[in-house]
Image (cartoon, rainbow, N blue to C red; front, side, top):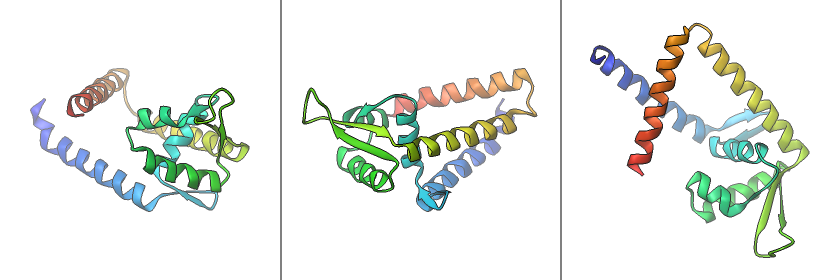
Amino acid sequence: MRNYYVQIHQYMQKLIQNIIILDKRGIRNNGDTLSITELFILKLLGDQKEKKIFEIVNELGVDRNSLVTILNKLQSMDYISKVKAEEDKRVFLLNLTDRGRAVFQQVSEKEKELVYSLLNDFTFNEEKAILKFLVKLDMLKNNLM
């Protein structure tokens, strides 16, 4: 197992570096440029009917002020709508607009195609090993935070 430690470590560093660069540069979609965080928020909202701002703060682990700045950008791009809750006027509910839902569906399809194309050449046992590795990475994240 230790035979590939150095190469795995190097590729993990490259992956992290590429994610950081991609997030700073943004991902182009239909003329708009979105950060990974912005796309992730669209995915969070696309998976559910509506979310409260504090729910997204908790899921992403970001501070409220940073999130509000991102939400305002997404709202100005007509990807999300933000309305006050009927039962508590201090709470805002977030939903995808039709434009936001279209982007969510496009991104979800691209993501699915990418994963399928990456895993296409792997055997069932190799897929299990990849999954085991990813689960362990996720568990490590929980120990670091």
